[in-house]
Amino acid sequence: MATTPIHVFARWKVREGNLQAVLDLLSDLHAQTILEEGNLFYTVNQSRTDLNTLILYEGYRDETAQKEHVNADHYQRLAVAQIVPLLEEREVFLTTPLGLS
Image 1 (cartoon, rainbow, N blue to C red):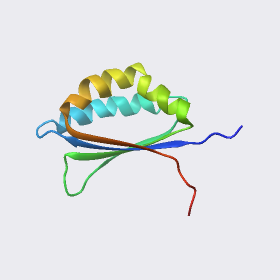
Image 2 (tube, one colour):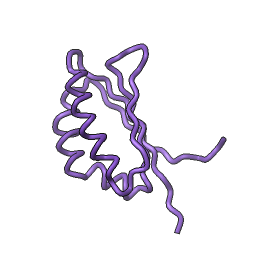
Image 3 (cartoon, rainbow, N blue to C red):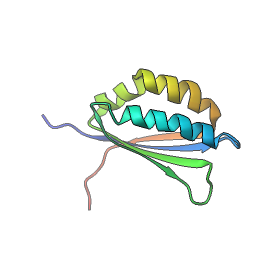
Image 4 (cartoon, rainbow, N blue to C red):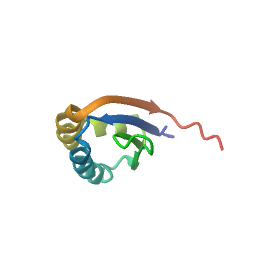
C-alpha cells in the first residue's frame, strides 16, 4: 500500500529577546524528532532579512506519522509548552508534495 508523505512548513516569528531560548529548545526538539520512526527530515532555517523569523521544513512518512509527531511527549513538552509562548506569530502549513520537477 502506497503512503502519501506529509511535508510541513512552519513560520515562527520569535518575540524580541527570545531567539536564543527558542533555538536552544529547538535543538532538543530537532534531536528527538529526527529519531521518530515516521520522520523523513527536519530542517530549521532562519530568515536573512529578519533573524527572529524561523522557517521549519519537516517531512513525515504519512499523515499518521505527522499526527504522532504533534502528539509526542517531546513535542508537547518542548514546542507547545515552552516554545509557542515565546513566539509572536506562528503559521503552519501541512502539504502534500506533488513530485513535479
